[in-house]
Picture 1 (tube, rainbow, N blue to C red):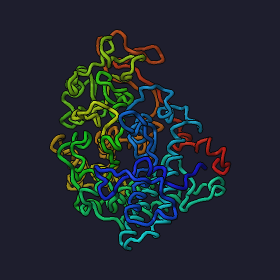
Picture 2 (cartoon, rainbow, N blue to C red):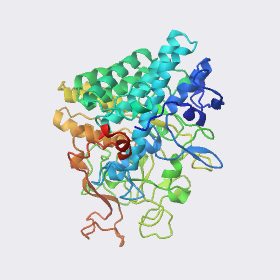
Picture 3 (cartoon, helix red, strand yellow):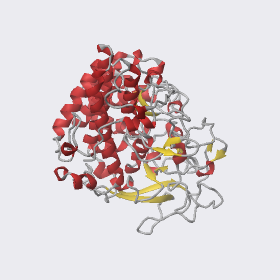
Picture 4 (cartoon, one colour):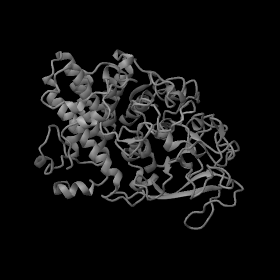
Length: 552
């Protein structure tokens, strides 16, 4: 196993002053420290803890700024949001050979580069957490502060094991700093033991961390009790421990610290990052610790690379504005204006042909060769006819798309409410209108969305509505593949042909492999072939197995 013992290289890259971690960074001469003299001041401890939070985020050194740019870990925009390419929500402009697309199209192998990144950077962050936990006691801190810092590191470590367990299954459980020999001979732990460990860690962290309401403005972005409980709830959902999950999510709700924000779009464009709906997020800072998300996702006409391309399958998930499911045969459907008569979140999430965006009208018509965003197989533009609207801030005012300070929400309160309803539903608890109004209808009823209330109480019918609501509310946030896997339906959903936007009258529509044109005039995009019994868990990277055959 490629294993990193010391995290000072990460801290050297960007040393964060966590006493003002929200939007203030502090450059420190970390190269002057050694492990013997580092733990001598509270400030050094904060620098070390910042390294644990920052993890393995990789930066692109450019003349103007050093932005997070490359495929990194679970809490980077590249590692989280682009995981949507493996689902039925989005496609990678770079095509079917993209390592993320390959996760579910029947071509995944142990040499896939993206799984290597997830694996190696997860264990790098785990190593940083272990080292921090083992050494923070050397600092002259109060017992209360030491315990809080340890709880933060335990939370971050447990999150890594949560992700590893969900996507790799059985993995090594490393809780101490290892020697090279130990790292290269470590064995996998059972999935059950990984779950037990993560449960216990999240429970302990939640008990020691401050509540969300106790975090100061300067501390936003650090772990809270609610963040730990939310990940504990995710763990219980994955294990199908429905009653445990319901109890956990209800604890967050009972605290009363979080809300459903009335303004949906503001949660993703950088204008409302202190919203009480955002329970936990990756923090970025313009000029000092930015990301290049907008460079990757902005329309081509505005200089973007258009790597993230929503699929037609996602647009067809959004209901009509009276709450009825989408149908091509419904007279309210307008292929020239996809968002007309639809759930407002469709236009908040997806940019379609003819929609205004900043100072342009998005033009992805495959017949318009003069448009930079023309739907083709050759231009550096969309491959589906759609672009993301969510996270593509229209209020961004900088000239450098690689210098974005927009934060990345990891846990939102809307997920908590929908997960609580799911846990209650699957546990067999009675479904009442009051339960629906306290959960799914809060999400649907936010002022900027205002969708009709759900009144269905039949468990089988409600399950369909709830899963659709979860997809639409959390679309393009990196959670869809996990949902499909834990629901056991990835093998059904991620099969067959996927299409993009409709362009009635276009004479150059891309045909499917059978050589036929879609009856709804949609552009053919790709074919998925999820292998049931194989693709539910990713293989351990071959590079790791070559070092340590115990991982085979």
